[in-house]
Amino acid sequence: MRVFVVASFVEALCWFVPRLPIAGESLAASRLEVGLGGKGLNVAVGLHRLGVEVDALIGCGRDEAGERLLRVLSAEGLHTRHVHRFEATSSGRGAGFIAPEGQSAIAVHPGANLLLTPAHVERAAEDLERAQLVYGQFEASVEVLTAAFRRAHARGIPTVLNPSPWQEPPAALRETTHTLVVNEVEASRLLGTAPSSLEALRPSLPALWASWPECQRLVVTAGERGCLAFERDGDALQAPALPVSAVDTVGAGDAFSAGLCAALAEGAPLREALELGNACGAHVAARIGVLEALPRGRPHISSRTR
Image (tube, rainbow, N blue to C red; front, top):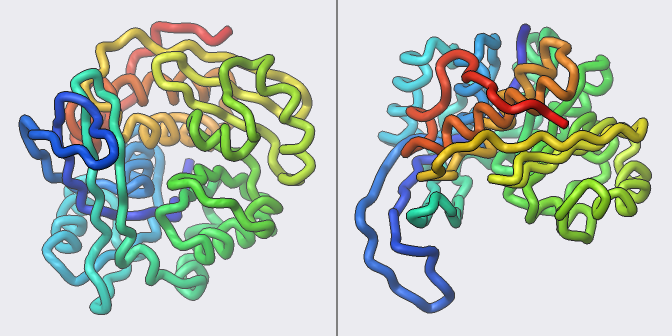
C-alpha cells in the first residue's frame, strides 16, 4: 500500500493564549512551542505511522529548519529522494494561536514550498505511478499539485484534495480530483452554505458534482461534531467524533486526512475510512503538538458511523 503526497513543510511557532485575539488586540501568551509541521508533512508522517509506504514531494530552504526536516524524516524512516532544497528563500514558516479549549487560528508563509515546479513532479513520476492514491493540499504550489493530479488521473490513480488554505481551485484540479476533504469554513466557500447537517448540504451537491466532474465524494470535517460525507451516487454518511478533551486542534485535520487516505488506499469502505480519520484526528486534538502527537499505529475506534 503506497501513497504519494504533494507535501509542504513549515517551521511552526504556536503561542498559547487565553482566547483567540480579535483584530487590533494584543494578548499575553502563556507559552510558545516551536516545531516542524506543514499540512503535507503532517499527512506524510501520519500515513507512514499508520503502516503506509509514503513518497513525499517537499521543498525546503538551505537553512536550519531544512536540516531539522531531514533529521526528522530520517528518524521516521521516510526517504528524502523527493526533498528539494533551495537557496533562494527560507523554509516555510507558520504561526498559530491556541486557545485553552483547543481552538486555533493559523497563518502560513509558504517560502520554499512554492519553488517546486512541475519538473519536480516529472522526476518523481516513477514513484507517483506506483501509488494507490495521491494526496495534495494548498500549502503546495497549485501548479505542482495540478501536474501531479493530472499524471495520477491519466493513470487511473485516485486523488484526494484538501483545498486548504482556501483558494478557488482551478479547472484543471476540478477535473482531476476524486475526493474532496474540507473543513466547515472551506465547505461554506466551496458550496456557498454552512455545513450544519447532511440535509442542509444536499441542495448544494448537484452544482458541486457538475463543476467537479471527476469528484466521487465530498468529506466535510466538523470538529467535535465529527464529519459528514457524500458520494456522487447519493449515499451520505455522518460519523460522530470520538469523545476527547481537546487541548490543541492544530493538525487534527491533517491527522484525519492521514487516516482517511490510509483506509482509502487499502480499499476500505468509506465508513471505515471516516472512522479511522476521526480516531486519528481525536488522538492529535487531545495532545499538544502535531508531529509528536500523530498516532503510531492505528488508534482505537470506539464510535460507530451512522
